[in-house]
Amino acid sequence: MVANEQWFGAAPDGIVTFTGKSGSSSDTANYSVSVDCGDGGNMVVASYAQDNSAPTNGPQLTTWTLDGQTITAKATQTDSTDECTISIGTCSGVSSGTNTCVMNWSSSCLRCMVFVWKVENVDIVTMEQAIDVEAYNATMSAYKDGSVVIAATGTQSGTAFTGASGLTYHGNQAQESNATAGSALAADANTSFSFTTSITGERAVLVGLELSKG
Figure 1: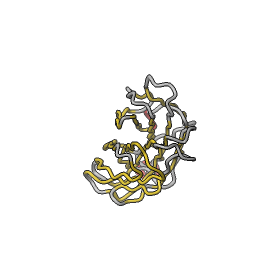
Figure 2 (figure 1 turned 180 degrees about the vertical axis):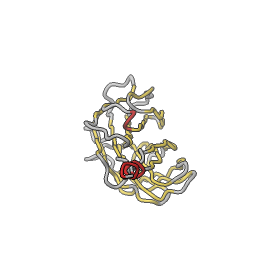
Figure 3 (figure 1 turned 135 degrees about the vertical axis):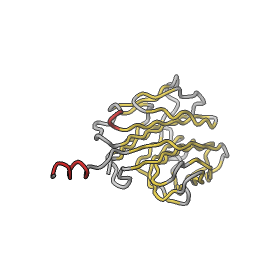
Figure 4 (figure 1 turned 120 degrees about the horizontal axis):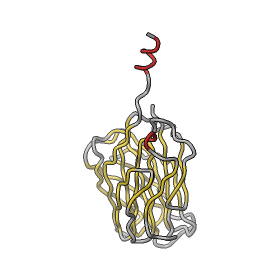
């Protein structure tokens, strides 16, 4: 009886579903773009921007919401020239269907891109781990069984990404330059991942997030 109780009480594995991507080349600090959020609920959002004047510390998000729900940043990376920035974060209570993602940056940007995932059976408040690097590849030292892993990268180059290793690839969002992303259930992922591109350098920025089941 105890064994059965323990089995039925075990937390199910996390679920991650890519729902949509969007972007704009409005040359402004304040972006509002429409993006598909699938069935809504708890969401992970990654936003990338390229500044047009390379201020100190690069463009930083001052307002970040999806369907009016505040996105809490978990990791942010700015490249060494202070031109490109990418952030990844979580929010809850998002409606199903197409919603507005508001991204107000600290300085005017040439372009902005966003990727969105729905996550289930995971803790979006106390994350397992997050990473931020100036690269197209990264390593997470330990995945926990049943957690989900999400990563996104962007570059000032217009050269498209063509795939991902260790993650399910979710394609490009091309807004003159490119951003891309991927995700996986940890049980099916490697402890390292990378995005396929012919680009070398080009101010690459990458963020990754692991959310434990719970």
